[in-house]
Image (cartoon, rainbow, N blue to C red; front, side, top):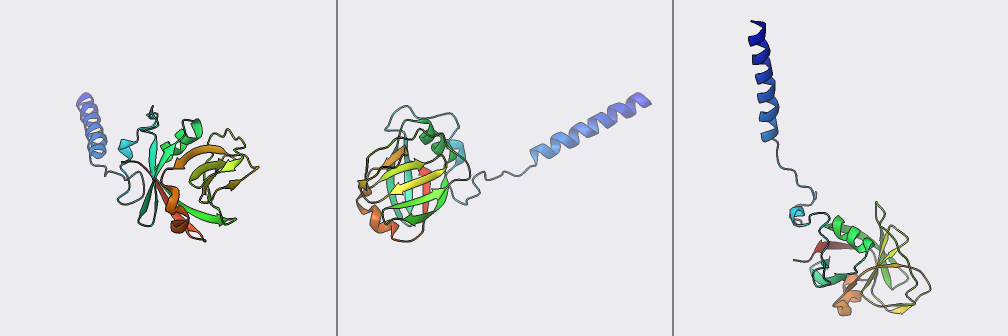
Length: 168
């Protein structure tokens, strides 16, 4: 009798555990309704060519193509996508946002900053430049906005929401 009771109890527990696992609802990993499907971005699958190392920068309804650098910081940023950043204004030539986590930094002095440069200041501050100028600061290059001509007008002079998603 004890043997049957033990077997029955074990079967009941197994059915309960496995039955519940199959009924768990799917969870949206992005937390953003309608955002890019996270399953497309499998971590560790860093594209080999510059043609594939791309993302889209969206401000309002305007989209800009971004080619990412082939470095650890750009790869780490790519693996965080999609991102929605509230970027603040600085100096009339850049927008910046401090991330909640750090990226691998390899800062160098570029000397010349160009409109469309996407850089990392320190190890946690993403900077998007919309004007060209000379600079003595050090940055890690993340990428470059390819069609940066209208970037300044779209970004405006105050804070702005910028979305970064993998290129389709």
